[in-house]
Length: 494
Image (cartoon, rainbow, N blue to C red; front, side, top):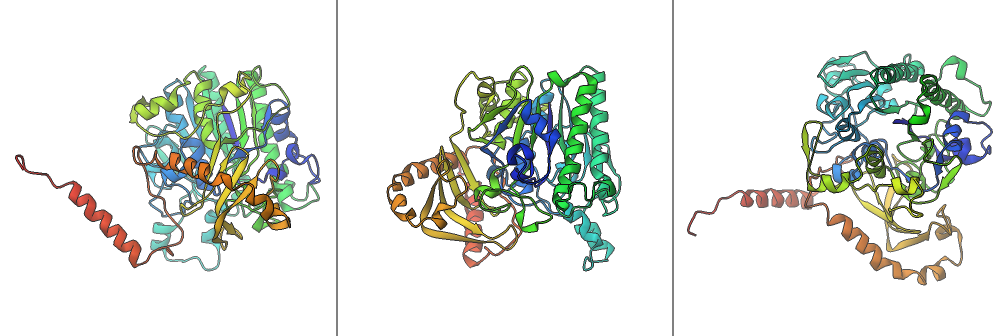
C-alpha cells in the first residue's frame, strides 16, 4: 500500500480534475485516476493537522483534539490512546514507513515511530514554520529558539533511535522532496527484499507556502509559481510510480493520492485553486473538498469516477479490510490488541471496500461534520444536503465566524459550489420549501455527539485564546470541583 499526499493541493490544480483549463498538465497524478478511480466528493478537513489526523487515526479530529494547526513548541499532538493505520497493519504483518511532513506533534512521543511506524524521515510542521527562524523579527535568543523553535528534519526508528538531521532551511527546501523520495524508495526496496507487504505514507512539502523550487523547475509551465511547483510535484509522484513498476509490484499495490485540506487560495499566486466556495480554514466546500484517487489493478476498473461521499476517516477501515481485517471498527469499539498495545476507541470511518469492488452500488457514508479550527460545529452534510449553522468569511488567518438566525441550506447536487444563497434572487422561496431538513440534521448531530462520552477524548488546542472570559473560567472551576466530588469515597454503611 502506497499513500501519496501533496500539501494544500487545490482540486483544480490537477489536470484530471480541471481537464486542461489551467494551462498545464499533471500526467503522473492523472495516471492514478486513469488507471483507477477518482472521487468527486472526497472530504478532508479545514487544516493540515486535522486532515492528516483524520486519515491516519480514522477518527474525527474533534474527537482526537487535532482540529487546528500544530505549532513548534506546543505540547499538543497525537494521543497515545488512538491507534494509527500503521499500528493496525503491523498486526497484519506489514512493514510500515512514513516519509515527509507529519504535523501531528513535535515531541518524541508524537513521532510516527511511537505510533506504529517502523521508520520515519521527514519534517514536523507546515513549511513556513520551518522558515520562520530565518525571518527578520524572529527572536535571536537561543533559549527561545530551544523552547519554541522548530525541530529539524527527523530520522527515527521504532526501536527508539532518533536523529535530528538539521533544520529545514530555505536553502534545503528545494531538495527536500528528493530527500524524502530517496528515504521512501529505500524503505520500499527493503520491504520487497524481505518479501513483506508494506504500508508507506509519503507526504511531500509541495505545495505548501512558501514555495522554493529547484532551479530546473522554475518557469517550466509558463503559467506561474504554483503551476511550476505542481509540475515538480508531479515528477515526484512519477518517480514513486516508476519505483513500483521497476520492482514489478505495481499490479499488486494499492496506490492512493490525496491531500490534507482545501486550497489555500489566499496565498495565490503561491496558493491553490478550487472551483468550490471558500478555502482552507473555512467550512465551505472549498475548505474541505480535495482531490482523491485510488488505483488497485484487478479490483478497480480503469477510468472509474466515484460520486459517493467519502471522508479521510474512511481509509482506515477500508485499507484494513483490504488487508484481511473487515471488522476493525467494531473490534476497536469493543477493545482491540494491536502492535503490543490495547485500544478501545470509536472509529468514525466506514469500510468502502464493497463499493470499490462493485459489490454494492452505494457507499456507506451519509454525513460529514464540518468543525472549525476551534472545535465549533459549523455545518453538516447529510446525503445531498448541507445545512450550515455558521460560516467563516475570509481566510484561514483573518476570517471571522458568523452565525445566522436560521441555518443556511444548500443542495450540493443542485448547487455544489454554494453560490445560490448569495447569487439567487429566488433563494428564500426555495429555502422555505426545505426547512424540513432542520430536525433530521439535528438528529445526525446528536448521533455523533452521543458517541463522545463513552470513548477517549482529547480536548483540542487553539491558536486564539479569545474565548477566555470569567464565564469560561467559572465553568472550568466547576468541572474541576465536579471531578473532585467524583473521587470522594463514601464510607461503608452510609
